[in-house]
Image 1 (cartoon, helix red, strand yellow):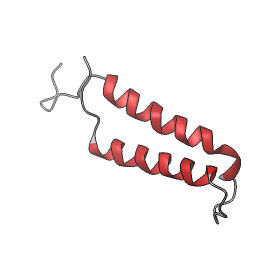
Image 2: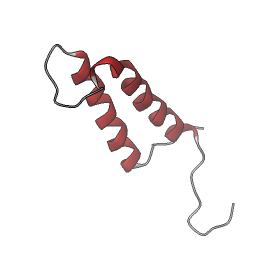
Image 3: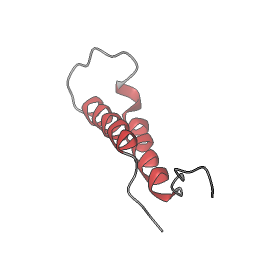
Image 4: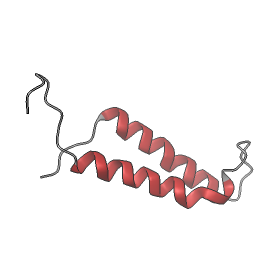
Length: 64
């Protein structure tokens, strides 16, 4: 059963994906080490969203 990921996880993965997309474009980014690893940033964003959707929700009352 899948569920919606946490909003913080969604924002973090969105930022990682945007960094990966911007690093793949032929523009100069002032962040060193970003241009050669753009596929890894996009993969990390996808993996975070997939893991956040597949993991069971954390109970609020502390019981399983």
